[in-house]
Length: 201
Image 1 (cartoon, rainbow, N blue to C red):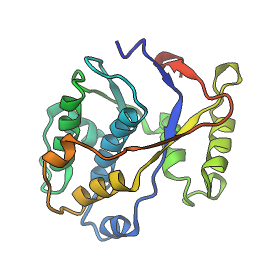
Image 2 (image 1 turned 30 degrees about the vertical axis):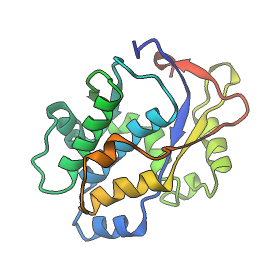
Image 3 (image 1 turned 180 degrees about the vertical axis):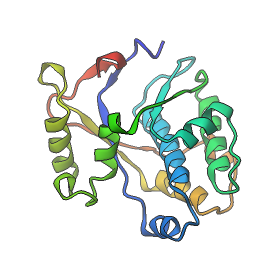
């Protein structure tokens, strides 16, 4: 089961393109929409790492109650892109023959790892990282792993990012394009990257 599957300790981050930032600033998009997009991207990272998730239960921790509710109910009452993001996520789970996703709410004050990753592009000066090397150095320092092991990073491909941002921009949506994906991304290892049981982190 996924609870005992060893996974490489991995962190990912993405700076939203300017057009997405503008849609958020003008309230065309909500923070809930971006959180749901983050859930989809997180799932894709797991796929991109090559993890065998057939018939496995995968837990998703998130501090956004709306995004969690949407996944629990597999539906969104929003007229925005959330419904399409949910469909894309459901399709990927079906393609990979995974067991239903298990979402759970994580209090914001406990969500520091995700906060750092999402705000490492200049939101907080002390967290600003202009390269993957500097980001991994900071992440390893603030969230050290057992046995002096190190985190690895996962960089999403531009094609995958474009597919997700296209949903956020409410462009034409085709289910077939989500059944077969281009390369999802690339793992970036640092010395000492390790495999851990999920319960160890």
